[in-house]
Image 1 (cartoon, helix red, strand yellow):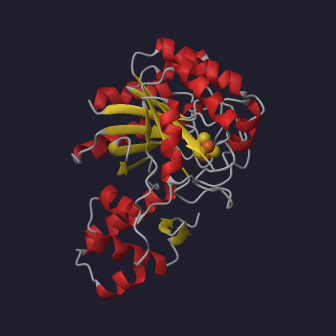
Image 2 (cartoon, rainbow, N blue to C red; image 1 turned 60 degrees about the vertical axis):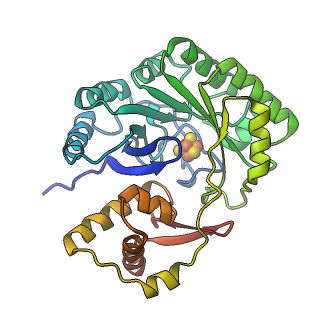
Image 3 (cartoon, rainbow, N blue to C red; image 1 turned 180 degrees about the vertical axis):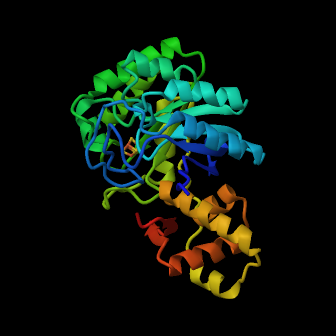
Length: 325
Ligand code: SF4
């Protein structure tokens, strides 16, 4: 029997998207950037080559099966263990999704390839495009995003502006701030200038509340991020989640034994592993994503951790669970 490929995961919780099915269309870690804050770790070699990294027909079969189970979701989000616009048939995939369902389709992208007309044409088919922009000047861009040598900030900003002119859907721009890397006065002024040119419908501010590729990344505190939000204008909103539960994990596991039928337990465990392969998650992320109670989640986490399938990482007093690979 051939091994089933899991292109689809979730629905996972998202502050921006509610409950969202994710579709992972590029393998770990095919990306144009090597961001210092990436939750997936370092990019071994950045690329700008577009290819069919995952077969569109197989992705659509998997989605069709998932939709039959009628789990409620607000969005289908095309993402990847890297940059999804590197997939050469992104447009065909979005068309295929729209033939299967009316759920809103979002593309989560670092925006670096939107200067290419064929990438803009593919993204045009989505309902929401969520690009990132963490710098308005070349030096900061290189420091925070460590781009492929084909990419410059000038191209990224002009690509985003062109896309804005053509695209009738929603553009939600995410800006990720790291203390002392892109928080200087001039750096924020150049981001503001870029944002005014791009004219996104929403601007979402984030910071390093989860484990990052580089260990010495400092997140901003909530007040500092809010002050930047006010400076960037009225469409700007802080989305970083500063409210993660502090770890009282072992005592919870010791004292609570969840009752879960065996069959459901094994499928939940595999969904949990699939979720953690994409990104580290807190206990509340897992509960919301898999629609299970904390007791159940802790039981699965405990079993999988004992077998070496889950690692625990602490960042700024918060507990995250992640896959060892
Ligand atoms: S954060 Fe996104 S864009 Fe940056 S390296 Fe990771 S996958 Fe690529």
